[in-house]
Image 1 (tube, one colour):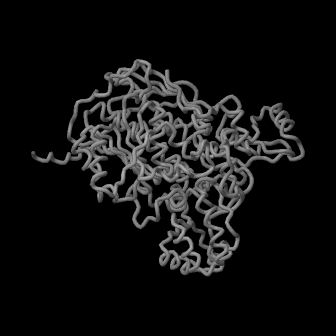
Image 2 (cartoon, rainbow, N blue to C red):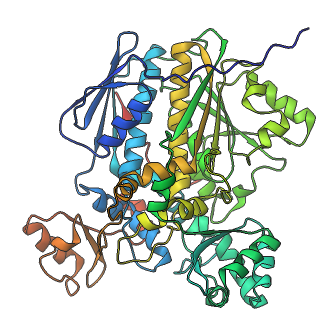
Length: 582
């Protein structure tokens, strides 16, 4: 039997080619982002503005998306305050802090695009979906879902939640991030700098868990060690140990090298198939009902993307190593399973596959032959080396949407390890997230892993819609670099014009009261000092003056009773779905 030819890559096409975007109604969160992403996906825009966006076409009908704030939280600052974003971002400093980037709004905009794409895909499959709504409050809760899950677990954290963490500063003033996933490499790096053994030992766990806790209270002696070391010596220690170090780059640096690329890439291939094989779904089903997603994801980015596809109705099958995903055991747990792991993986099926085994790789190819989506975030080159890249799997399944969520998307030469905090450091995010009176520092909240997962799901939905409209499978690539560029776009644009890209001093900084914190859209608008007033009284006085103000959530456990959060089968907190379809 002859081996079928590898599908040739066709020209890049847009899933919204031939469709039109129209604006109406009052403005909503992230209108410009939604419009730009739909334009990049091929839609013709009417040049208008407004928070109600309708995509229409002769062959597919129309779907309208609407983004909203909330009753109490009416802008970016107050949404960050009420959903716990300020609390998590502020853990490194010991007090709640507002992100100077429009993080909740950006997440809302990406989720709105997802909703539109899912609605259009549902219509193409015979479902009568005409409207989708996304609230910024629900988007904000989604971005902190892992932290919320841990706050509601039945046991405590494995490491202390206390101020502290990177970045580090050398004796010659270089501010940098350090990354390694290996405790032996961690120890070797610090020994090369003559750090005390006890500090090295005590520092590993908080450093390792910073992705989960958003803080890293390791011994101060480690900071003192690098402050006594030159950058040349630090680089040598990284080289001989195998650790990665990355100086914090500015937004101007990123603007100078920015290539203008979209945050994802869709590459359809020429091998056609017959669309509609999964269109037999209930008339009241979710947009992705009947689809199968294979996910070989680690940590946050790819698992979150697959989780969102599952919320939209797809059956998600996790490909886990022999013995299962070790992160299932990461504390704190609910009913014996990691609460954080459940936040990203609840409801998924699991199949153990040893990708080092030729027999198991063949089994994985057979599973991919019947899937709609194959998603992974393996290290660069791994899939090709194992014969599991798009060109391999498309041979037996020309209908496959093959998705790869990476760190850098091969867009930067000599890039460091493609992890959240390293990408933040390399792309100027550390400068964008803090106002002008604070030194640049990447957030220890996993900003880019989460936003990268959102963009990954957006790209996969675009690939599925393109497949449905053209009869061709698609390769989809997204990255943490793309997430950084989306998040910092307004700041980078100012830097490119020679303007100060940072927000002014005190921007989005909450105000302390006698018993807590409050947030205003513009803290400089506060008519008087509220530090001696109880929070309730301060809010009443400010609202009497027509100023929108909200209390800042400082303990995520408080959200479990006040926010619309449910419990899953394991008893772990679960945030509500971000979209409402009608």
